[in-house]
Length: 192
Image 1: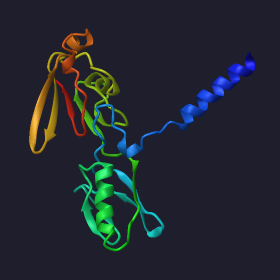
Image 2 (image 1 turned 180 degrees about the horizontal axis):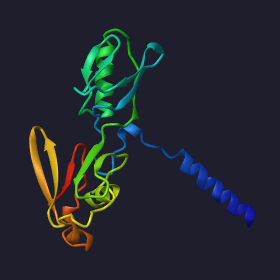
Image 3 (image 1 turned 90 degrees about the vertical axis):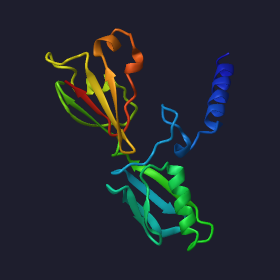
Image 4 (image 1 turned 90 degrees about the horizontal axis):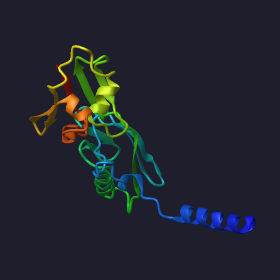
C-alpha cells in the first residue's frame, strides 16, 4: 500500500512539474492587466549570442532607455512584451533573426503616497496590488485627529486628476466596499 501511494504521489508530482508555466511577461497581475514599465524600473535586455547587445538599463524620468545600435526609445507605459517586440524590430536591421529577452530586474516605479493625518506619512514602494485600507495600514493607520469620513485619493492620468472619496468607517464595517479601490502607480491618499 505504501508503495502504491508513493507511486501515485510521484506520478502527481511529475504531472505538476510537466505542466506548462506561463512566462513572466505573459502573466497578468491581480488586476488582470500586464505590468507596464515605469520610470525608475531596472531592465535586463539581451540579444541572444551577442554580448555587446546585453545591457542593464534604468528607465529615465522621461520614460526612455538607451540601447546599443538603436539609441533611445520610449519604455514607459509599455508592457514587457511590447518593449521586447519593438527592440527586436529595431535590432533586426543590424542582427538577422535576433532573439531578444527583456526582464524587469527591479520594480522601482510602483510608488504611492499617503499624506495627512496618519501615523507614518510618506512614499511607499509597492511590490503587489494594494487597496486604500492596506495603504493606510502601511502608513501606520489613522491618527486620532483624522477626519475618517473625508479621505480622498488623487489619481493623475493623461494630464487629468480624478478624485475618489473614501469613508473609512463605512469600508471598515463592510459597507460601500467599492470605495476601497485598488491603488495605482502615483496615487496620492490624503487624510485630512
